[in-house]
Image (cartoon, rainbow, N blue to C red; front, side):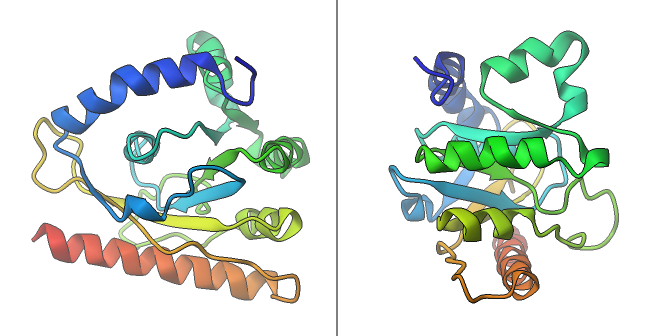
Length: 199
């Protein structure tokens, strides 16, 4: 199997997703919006280091997650390479990572990222968004699927939810800043709906 669809990712998804959904009692909402094929970018909020796993558990597609370069160092470096993650140097405003992500998208693969750029450890609902996801979607001409993950990663959690929004298209004439604000507003709306449903 090629790097586009790494065998380790699919093996771990096949084994791990049912266990993850059962252990954390994950509630998945509106996963029907996820395209079965074709290029797509998954974008969502980020409070916990496990926030990509509810998305992985929601689809059989391989998602190439953009991950900070520190994960590619030390004991975890081989794992992140084997599952097809994209190494991002956040200090370098990494054009190399962007090019790799665009190459995946042009080969009709899926890419996942967190537009906040880092985990939100504040009391704010969302941190300011970076423009990278919108820029890539505009360049490739692919949709963005927004998602929001909320709740506790505890055994048989009472409130762990991942909710997907309608695919967002960035047109050639759209301003990057306006589209980024639109994406942030959509993820914020999904997040608030999760809070509402978990009460």
